[in-house]
Image 1 (tube, rainbow, N blue to C red):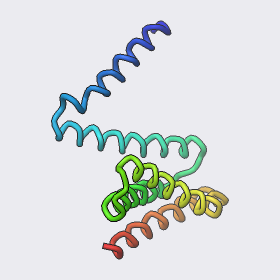
Image 2 (cartoon, rainbow, N blue to C red):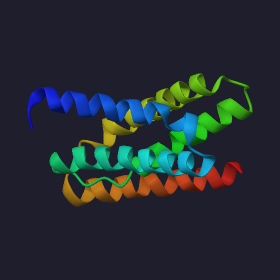
Image 3 (tube, rainbow, N blue to C red):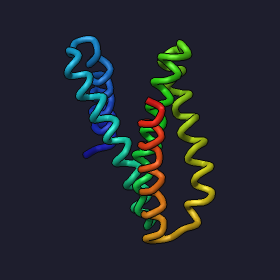
Image 4 (cartoon, rainbow, N blue to C red):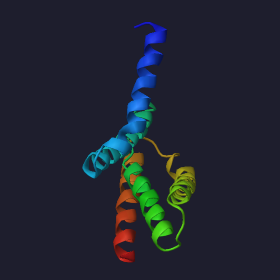
Length: 129
């Protein structure tokens, strides 16, 4: 495909996605939201697999970010956009702190540790509820 055709198709796709909330119903928007969340998780997992690591902790960090966004919006009356940015900051800081220790491990030990981190996050969320 020629270079200019790629940009035209890309711009048309962005235009369609930008107009989607205006014309689609709530079900279509919820499905699109879930698709984008799973795409984000798949891309982040793909990046680690290409680096030779198998991590199960990304789902926990994604859940931590979602939980932080919900709590900051509902309890602190934070703007939804600001709560999403806050959630990214919280998950990023948690990943940075955990990453200093966990990324020194290799192979099976890395997978076991990241899986344990994911299970611990779920237990903490259930305890808060």
